[in-house]
Length: 443
Image (cartoon, rainbow, N blue to C red; front, side):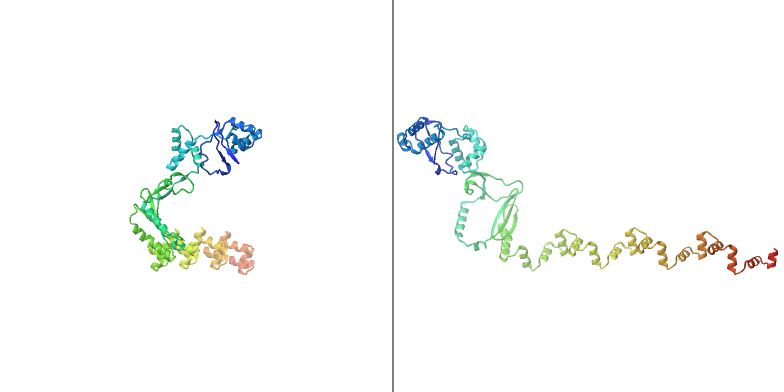
């Protein structure tokens, strides 16, 4: 299959035909190649007339001095559309001319960090008004895209030669040898804002071209610099560099050498210190911070001493105190408040002592007193009021002693006296008045 470019301008010059199978969408030269000249309408109509007369492609091409592929393309278009004129093309026309596109590419190659706004301004001065999006589309068709510039160390030529020599010398070293190497480097972290990021226009796999990188140096300022080391299987110590990076040998001696020891023995930094001083991990921490073991644990967990003991033994605060002093829970409360057992209970329930005892034994107040003193109810009342039994009853019922006896035995006064003295009624009267029976009757 072949395709031919067309133009609205007529010319008698030869056409340029490009096979479709030789084109590639990634070929960046297509969009910038100059527009080819087209055959005028008279020649196209003559080719069709000769084809109607029965002539072949090659014969028509030799007669008109054109290629057979060009003749075939015009005839196929006439068979399909029945016309030889240019058909309307879809899409908006390209706003950037081939010369403008070449100018953009030349500027980007010479200065990859140029911005789209700079390119828009250049085209405006040349008389072409485009947007930044159009610039991006034009560069993308050439295989260029905006990428963050890679930051690489700022190396002098001597540094480059030394690094290249090192790489060549160790190019064939086995992997086991690289596992024994400890690497160190520094990094800079800005404290305020972000590290400035610059973009460059570049093609794929061209990120480390010197034009597309930003050289960096280690310096002070509104940032911090950290030194660190690592190996193929392990990370070592870190160190913050304050101010300028002076005393680099001291940094290596205090950080790199201990990291190498730790890696050599397969130990962590903590294990290395415990082994060096012959201490356990706990002893090392207590020695380092100048704390007792208990203070260290409370500080580590953010607990008070009491909370730490409770957590360690799985006890409540009350259980811990009873266990510590060897006391029962009741004895602990009594000791804490300085109260007797009875006072503690009365305080706990908000009751008087008597109410507490009656509640404890399920008795009334009277029953409690009777039980406490081993008395009957009558004896308790007699004891309470300091009365005899007879006085208690007379007092209780509001009666005289005689009325009480009469009420108790259901007798009249006379019957009571006769009963009390074992006399008949007549004998009682004679005795009461000091008379004989005859005198009593005569009286």
